[in-house]
Image 1 (cartoon, rainbow, N blue to C red):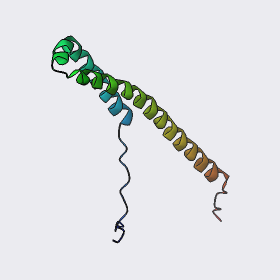
Image 2 (image 1 turned 180 degrees about the horizontal axis):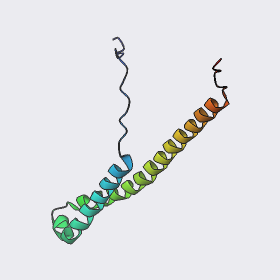
Image 3 (image 1 turned 60 degrees about the horizontal axis):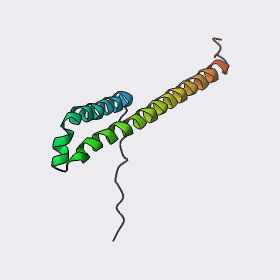
Image 4 (image 1 turned 90 degrees about the vertical axis):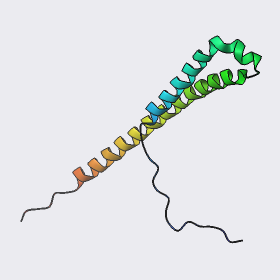
Length: 100
């Protein structure tokens, strides 16, 4: 069986508002957890308490996700600023062409 190789390169990953997206999802998990708490007895009677705890786990993992994407976003901005500074210093060091 031959190994499949793609005929074209993969597209660049999309960069969007990652921090806002993860924060919104985390808030949604916690809201779902809080909304389900008054009905814990109903969930318990039907052996569905995992729904409640899944929402809490989603919120907790979302907090880790927020921490991670904020660090990632800061690192990307730092790298872009450093690259811009290096590019700017290289153009300043090169002599200007003479008008003679």
